[in-house]
Image 1 (cartoon, rainbow, N blue to C red):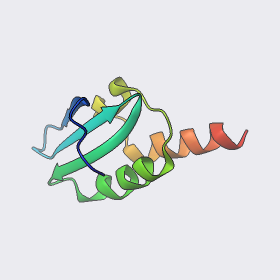
Image 2: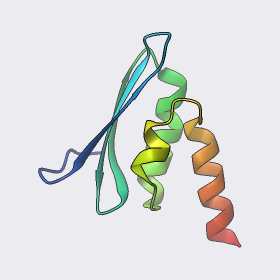
Image 3: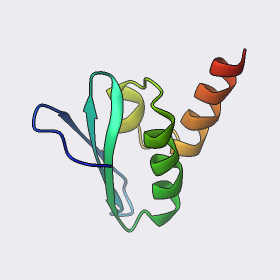
Length: 79
């Protein structure tokens, strides 16, 4: 995704020093970058593409895998 000049920045830091940096705009994820967090970037890209609304708290919560957030949002969208 692309950085939006008015977006909200969210950081996810894990104890193993892998970091993810997100930017949200109007309740949606628009940008993701990571260091040492390759497994989390694919679902983050899918989350960007979905256009689903997500909370900053969920993105910042390192105990909650991005893939789980994406699956929950897809399930909610289908239901």
